[in-house]
Amino acid sequence: MVNQKQEIIEKLTGIQSSRLSYYAELTLAMEQMKKKSNQLRILNQLTKIQVNKSWEEISKYLAGQLHQAFRFDFFVLSLMEGATVFSYICWFESDKWNCQAKTGTAVAGQAMDAEQIHGILSRYMPRTHHTSVALTNQMNQVFGFLTFLNHSPVEYSDEENHFFQGIADYVSVAIENIFLFKDLSKKVNLEAQLIHSAKLAAVGEMAAGVAHELNSPLTAILGNVQLLLRAIRDEPANQMLNDIFQCGLRCKKIIQNLLTFSRQDEYQYETLSLNDVVEDVLGLIGYQLQVSGITVQTRLSDDVPRFEGSRHQIEQVLINLLLNARDATQEREDARITVETGTVDTDAVGYVYVSVLDNGTGIKEEHLPQIFNPFFTTKEKFKGTGLGLSVSHGIAETHGGKLLVESKEGEFSKFTLTLPKARCEVL
Image (cartoon, rainbow, N blue to C red):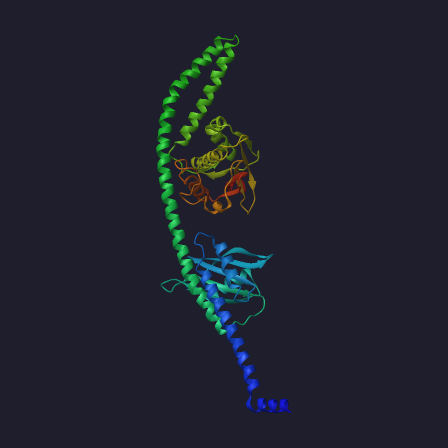
């Protein structure tokens, strides 16, 4: 009887329904708080974008953060440089984010808008549905877009669209900072190259003077030794004179290489044989490597096509790589350097390459992204300027090639210079 009275009272007063409503509202409020907290955490993470990362790495980082708040099959970061649009398409596969870069062309004379970017992306990702927000600078000019691509239509709520726009504002500021950093890095790199070029010019001038001074007495030595070889046939005098003559020829070749290295026409391009350049460089510093206790091995391919470039600059890159390899193997009892040439076809043009492999101390994994930065060095004080690899990387890019690195700490380092084949070799 008491239970029936209690049930009648609850029905008349609505106490039970009020409790249900209260708990429903509380649950909804907690979900909203969790959502807001997640959004704030994502915005906080977006402020931690590293300015020295590549655009592919930045795109994958953005995709990973945004996927925690939005549904999408693909994420795209699009950036405009003049009339060219660079799009970095990201997708999640095999437990990691992948990225592929694509380029497109904007319509001349028209301000870029979402419709244009969707048209460009449709060429690479047909039959997908697009949702984009613009990236704008401080002058309210559009310089890029963030885009979600889905195989099936996805309707984002007003709250999600508002949050997406807020994210674009954060990313715009971060990318502007990255642009400034990259521009500053180029200027620092240029200044470093100018300083290094000035030093090389001074060294080259001195080398040219020394080479000319040595040339005259060496010519007399070689001439007189040849006359003595004709007159003296008896052993061991003849063998000793022949040794003197061979050493004199080697000195003459070193002097010729010094004169070539010190020439001031280093930016003059010509059609070159990569094997010839390697042999000239080894003739110049090969003896220095051998007296350091290093075994130098060569694996020069017989059918390496020719390339167009500056002999002086390519020699400069090889010398830098060989001297770095020498420094890395100083503590090895079985120090070895292997120089290899060959071809690699990564596109329709194709490339020739030369690699320098050493069994030295290797490079720490955390240092690999920084080794091409100006003034970065792991060598002891006064033993390195941090400019050699930076300048070499710039020379490789100037020639339309790349300078690549593979390394494992305590085991090896391998630097590979790739250069486009000469046009006559491609036809």
